[in-house]
Image (cartoon, rainbow, N blue to C red; front, side, top):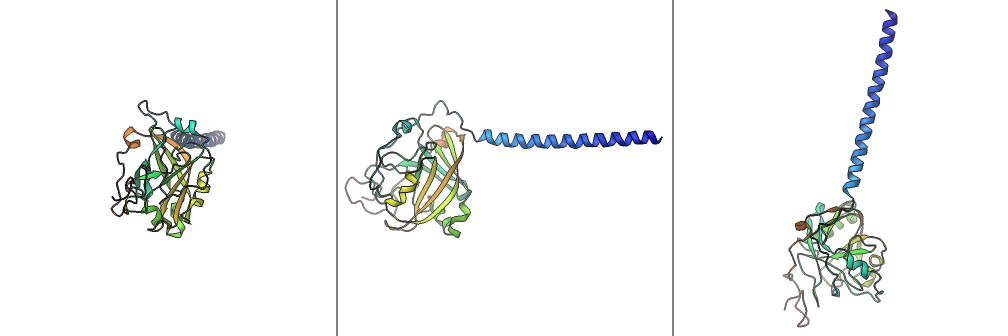
Length: 261
């Protein structure tokens, strides 16, 4: 009888260890599947067959918001830009920001409302995924980039670090970035563009004003890429084109845009 009880105890320990090993293996497999699934989810996905990338813009950004650089280097990525897809929409879900992206209209003297615009100097800085900055700016007004300014005024914007910014492109893709830096008090001159426009990696820079005047300091928010996912045609092609702001100044010339006649 003692022999039988000894055998029973050995078998119980054996099957107990086997059950523990099985649980560990299943748990490990579950973690692997979750990580693998996330990794796959964030990979670039082939563009929809009906998506047609647009050509890059040629208009320069108005001096009111972004003064031209003292000297612009010759374009080294014209061919790359022609093949890349241009940014069409910017969203920061945690801040309630969701705006169409447009190029500045010709002879712009004042940025439009209810859109974000991208800078275009020697080349357009509006192609997520390329080894260069995508540089977007909008007014610090309700419905635009005001939440960036408001958040930056609390502990220098610490709460924004880690938030996701999403830039949709014309080929039905959603480029996801993570905010990594908040820069306050940048002067309203060309020096504020030196760092973003010299970037050699894919980066997203967002800008808005910290005051109501042309020479008001600027807020810059920097984000790093973390992945690309597919987007629907409707999501990647918002219909808004912007409008002249109610408080826009009067036009200085007859062919100006973005201002009041």
